[in-house]
Image 1 (cartoon, helix red, strand yellow):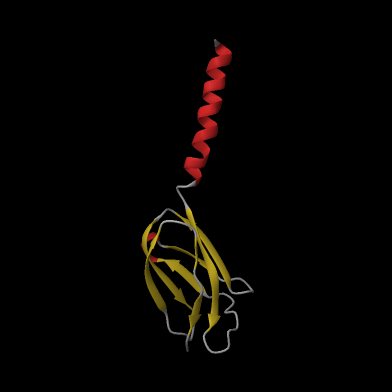
Image 2 (cartoon, helix red, strand yellow; image 1 turned 180 degrees about the horizontal axis):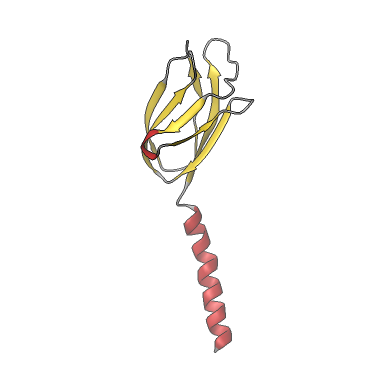
Length: 101
């Protein structure tokens, strides 16, 4: 009897893990200069409603994992015009941004 309980519990945990993994989505991409295409190292990406964000690395790449939902995505860098995009994020998303001076 105990073995059956352990087996049922193990099966429930095994099938519940993929459901938990779907509760978050990843937004990633590159932030570049619109004119030259050069990576903007340290450019800022922010999810306004969550007050969270990420900085672009040496390749201009950023990545953040958040719960699904509708958000304002903000891209900015000193000396460049800011970009704000309203987006419904329900699955992983790759979004590049080219900032203008």
